[in-house]
Length: 407
Ligand SMILES: *[C@@H]1O[C@H](CO)[C@@H](O)[C@H](O)[C@H]1NC(C)=O
Ligand SMILES: *[C@@H]1O[C@H](CO)[C@@H](O)[C@H](O)[C@H]1NC(C)=O
Image (cartoon, rainbow, N blue to C red; front, side):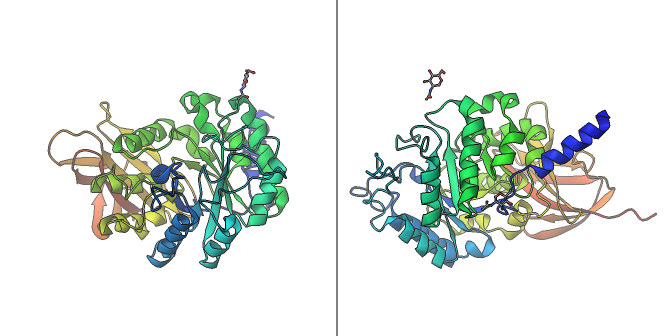
């Protein structure tokens, strides 16, 4: 009887996860927040304010510089796009200084490039930036977004109590569903209580949201990226089980191309986001990226790990006692594994490290190993992988294909 109950519960968990047909693999695109924040000052800073021009420019570069070809698709607007007050009719109004022709015109232009557009709101009485929140206006706001042709909604949780999330986020989700327009639903639900992971109702969140932001906002620094990876490593056992086609943990934006990451650290963010089956939303200036930054962001072998159709999130499988280096492993649909060996300490020379297949939870004696950043087949390895890692947040990422035992 108990066993039957457990089996039913298991089935229930899977069958009630949100399925609006979207985000069968983690979504990819661009989101303005980390790089541009709430910069509405187009008079003094026209090049960097969050105007229609900025979003269109990013859409064009995404389309014509190859990002779209490798999967980047969404252009997402974050907070501060509105006027401080609703219109006389109660509707949200986009700031005409930022969007002179309105959001629908921007949506049309983005759609005509074969891309998608996302927008931002907040469940509370105000957004985090102090603009009108959606509380008491849910249906009107969501219907407005659908009528504008919006493809994705990021819903924040400022200016309300976390105790209201369990009713608020599902209410907005139901209203989105009722519009009949498929809208990817990204929820800032867990992050407000992320220090008390046990309290976060992930099963409930997965019933409502395509994506959920687990941790603090990413900032433009290696320390921030390192902290997020650490948090996911510590909590992966709990989180990873809720990830899969249609539902993803969200460690926040890629900051590759900004000011905070070295070449090695940029590779590590890309590798680790792929291991975590994370949404790949860049927050950077596509107008000024260097070639090596583009190469990392468009590394198709790493993207293929992120986009693996089985959608099984990778986990940290080993960390040394002093937290100086660690290994992650992710099972892929074709029976192979993605592996990251990541070194954190900043002391001294590049050094060799060995990850055994056993540590990596790969049941094999021998395997083909391919380096996903150098794009080289390294040959057949026995028992494990030895790789040289420089200090300060570097990694190696491999695809490991076990050789079936020859009896
Ligand atoms: C949150 O709840 C507390 C206690 O019920 C209340 O005093 C406070 O005003 C609420 N805050 C918001 C933003 O609704
Ligand atoms: C609404 O929800 C139903 C049931 O989960 C789902 O089949 C359908 O695709 C959803 N529609 C939209 C537009 O999200």
